[in-house]
Length: 388
Image (cartoon, rainbow, N blue to C red; front, side, top):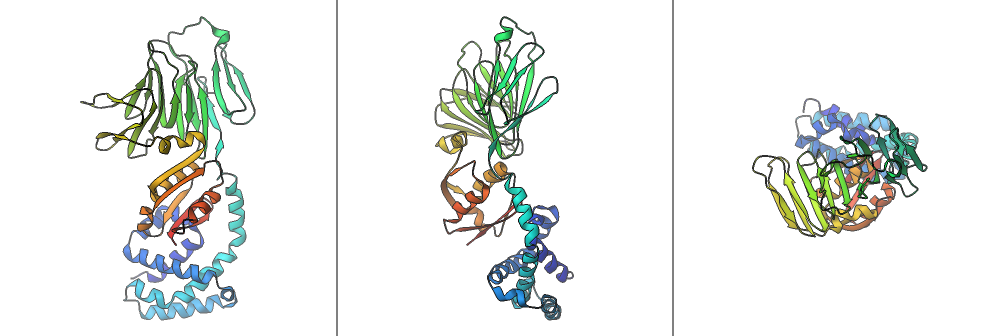
């Protein structure tokens, strides 16, 4: 290849600086089969030589010059053919680069450690535009119209209406709660409905329900325990569908960037309806899940183990014979990390586990590694996944 030397240097640098793997440059580069083969070969030799203590006593610059000279003569060959012959020199270079950069890595890791632990926090955006951080000390706000908004030590926001009894607005007044990555939070609405919000979720809701319905707007995932009121149905509206109930427990997962949206019923009954011409409401019974394909607009209803989809409410990741890629997608969203896979086949490894959501990510990865099927390498917010 014309830029064979640049390819080697680029691969070496990315392995020494895994945060590069999350960038567009690396993702475009690795799509080429020759680049994937080169990267995998160098990675394997890197791991082997990282375990050898005498690697640090070699003259790295001299070894690299020898390597460059040998590979230049084989320039016309495919990368994987000469990669093996040069592996020792490249591996030494990688090892030295890695440990020379060790202090910087440790500093970044310590800084990232504070953010790679699950927590309970959120941001409240009042109708006035005022923003309030939630999750710290207890909070008690009295708004201009007399309402009280409180956040207790259980990390739950609640609305109290004692001071405005008898007041009925003609138009609803909306607040919004935004939950960042790596966090969750709970809101008790004015009617007594409890909404548990998963990470990267936004809920917009009226501070007091008026009219003939109770409608809220969701982007993300939330578990609802709806207070019963047959005269005033509760409606969850997302960008692609809505769920209507009078009193029940259910989970709605509707992240805008996902390929599917779903509603999972725990108890009671709900009706789900996708937006669009010809869509009809679908009634669910407990343990059923409605799944909507956002692109094709096709929907299906299936029976599921609800614990797999609601375990997060109890502070757990629950996996049962799930693909590793699906598991890592969930962890990536929770911990706000980027995931890079060495080889496509690793994505299809199956995993079953119950893991605590509030543990540090390193502990979660260590537990998964005990299966002896999967290996992880983390540098800052980049996690590399490989077969053992």
